[in-house]
Image (cartoon, rainbow, N blue to C red; front, side, top):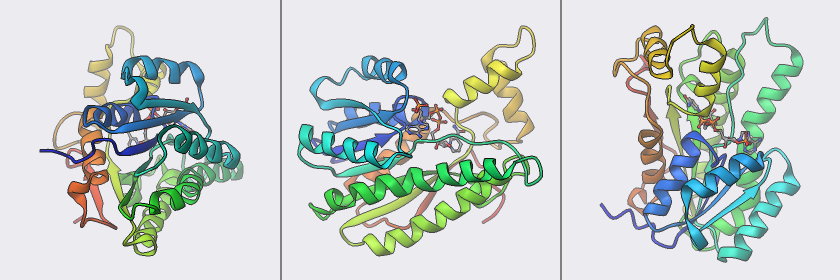
Length: 260
Ligand code: NDP
């Protein structure tokens, strides 16, 4: 299927690893021009080499929690490509902990990351996305937004708020910009590789550890998702093929959730 993304310009926050990196790769394959941001320069350089997008790919060091850095990201994007058609709000990570183990500072940090990693880029890119009247925003969210996990209580509460916000924005920004969410279940990525390094048993491979973790979560598909499976959903919602879809949430979780 032609995703009709040729020459469109898409910004992917947190595009230097995992789901964001794979999204950038698929967008380049579809002929889009892509801007990828992240905080760590070395990781960005590795991503740039992997993506090998030449003049169609720009990597920019940017912390999405810093307004001036996000403004610079927008300015560099417009300078390089002259327009913005899509924004993937993907930067982030989960903080483990429950109501009692997380401190007030942990709450501020997690609520700050979860909300402002969407609020800053969406506010700052809104005018540019509106220009051609068919802008598209995809908010990468988590299944915990509707099915809270006891060990991710802070993150779950924040995710629920962000899901709610995305719904409001879909109405507020229509018809010029569509806003949709993808609820990710467990997807192999940089953050799981880091957890494996901390938790692995002696002699246990990454694949064995992932299968063990999938078993603990009783995932109906009996495995973690792959970044390409997550990215395919993001690319579809971004694309003009989803031109009548806004305010939706698409779950990519291997069937993890139990609610309807
Ligand atoms: P990775 O750790 O592989 O990638 C996270 C990316 O976000 C990196 O590029 C990282 O780069 C970047 N990032 C983190 N904080 C910031 C920041 N403040 N500003 C700019 N970039 C930032 O994780 P995933 O691919 O797994 O995660 C992608 C998104 O999907 C996250 O929001 C995550 O919470 C969500 N998600 C993932 C799930 C999973 O199982 N994988 C499940 C549910 C949700 P750097 O550190 O250099 O800044």
